[in-house]
Image (cartoon, rainbow, N blue to C red; front, side, top):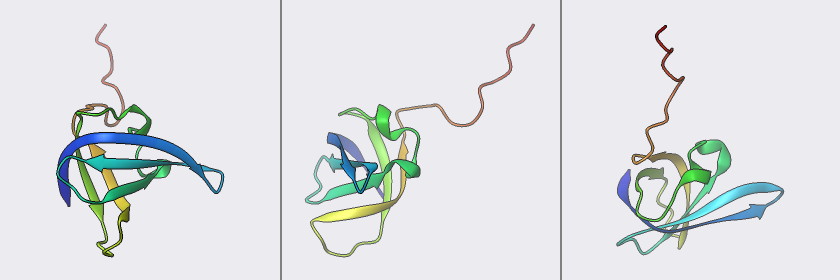
Length: 83
């Protein structure tokens, strides 16, 4: 697991699916995340604190196996409004 601040993020279409390329401050590699990892991915902005998990293959681009944006607090169902 790596936690860090997003320096840059960009989306692309790869084989008909949206993927996101993420560069974290202080990291030498680029992380690749598919949209099915997290509904938060389209909302990520530079400066967000994120937590990523990946299998280290030694490549310059690593595919993420888990992603969470710690700056976005939108997990699970919304609380029920009180009458």
